[in-house]
Image 1 (cartoon, helix red, strand yellow):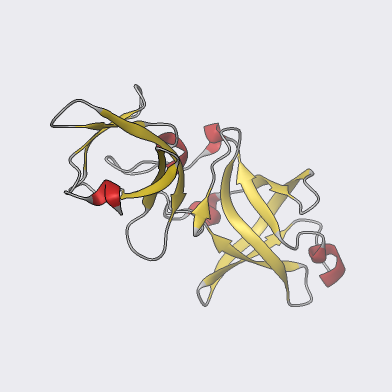
Image 2 (tube, rainbow, N blue to C red):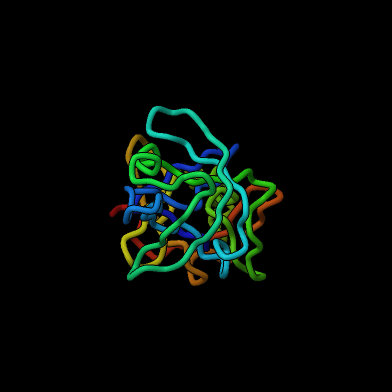
Length: 181
């Protein structure tokens, strides 16, 4: 599963691959949090878009990317000072869906799961549709709205028995009482 921030709402026109926090150092670098599980994604990425905090998008060329502690350092071409880098404070690095990285067989992007209908494997009854995601260190949780309230269902093989992206359907075997939580 391609993970995201603690609460992720997916935009079908863009795939957010990192949250940029602030400048780092005095050479125009920025500190970011990677939102991708695709191995080597930043080492091979050359171009992307940044959604600035004012809502506008700018194209960037990525000169370098490397891990620093539990975060990511990015260096964009032409961004060479702290004040240049400050433009990217509190922004999102994104790519078009067609430029997503490749996941191993059996792995899914959150954006592909969003909108999928959950169907009870035993009864064939439709339970609801995935409206968002939450992640807190354990398995990602699919958000559904059922009868006016939010319900969280873990996205794990023990529950999600069959994922059919083409038909936007997930066959599930829900543990007793999970919809009452």
